[in-house]
Amino acid sequence: VSGLPADNPSIQVSVGPQIVCTVTQSGDVYCWGRGGYVGDGTQEDRSEATKIYTGVSMAKVDVGWLHTCGLSTNGDVLCWGKDRGLGDGVERERNAFALTPNYTAPFPDGRKAIDIGVSSGNTCAILDNGSRSCWSNEEIPSDGFHYGGNVSAIGLISVSLAGSEREKDMCTILDNDSIDCNDHEMDIQDYSLDLGWISPAPRSLTLGQGHACLIDHNYSLKCWGFGKGGAL
Image 1 (cartoon, rainbow, N blue to C red):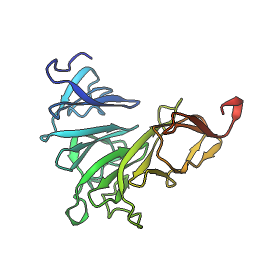
Image 2: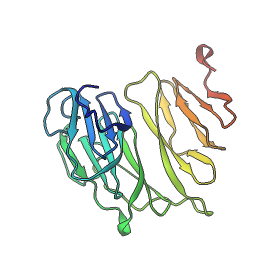
Image 3: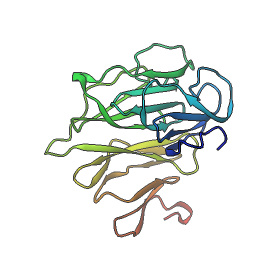
Image 4: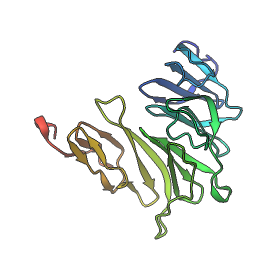
């Protein structure tokens, strides 16, 4: 990709309908694509990778439909783009942009994030006490949801819907070798696909038009949902 430093390799990348972003080995973020969403303070389209100034070392970036969020190495979350899931508590006019990364409001009780995920309309973070905090629109991060029973959340999987440029959802990785998708029922065309609770945790998970497929620990491929057109 043009514009990326030759001596600072990428370690993570996220692709969205508007932009692409990558985190380099040194913790820098580079993005390119549609103006306003890139995060460089302008509304200019960028055909080359452009450094996004966060002021901190970054560990991860996740690109959604209208907004992007990054996780710093010290557990803070910064977001930019349009007014969904930014978490900074700023009231903006409809379709207004945050043209540069903004810190979300602090997590309750001084908690820090250990992972983040961005869906089509909201943002979630796994906190350092094993809970999951989510927010959308003009909300700010709230107390995290605790699973109880000595089960902790340890990560997030952002799942993009195959064949759709907008739909993206999240599932929560738990420390008991399972994935919780129960809070993320997706309405896809004329279908409602409930992913449910998946155990043991799969190696890979993806969504189609009204169905889902995964590769389990034994490398077996399994699909469920609606079999329209022989999709299953």
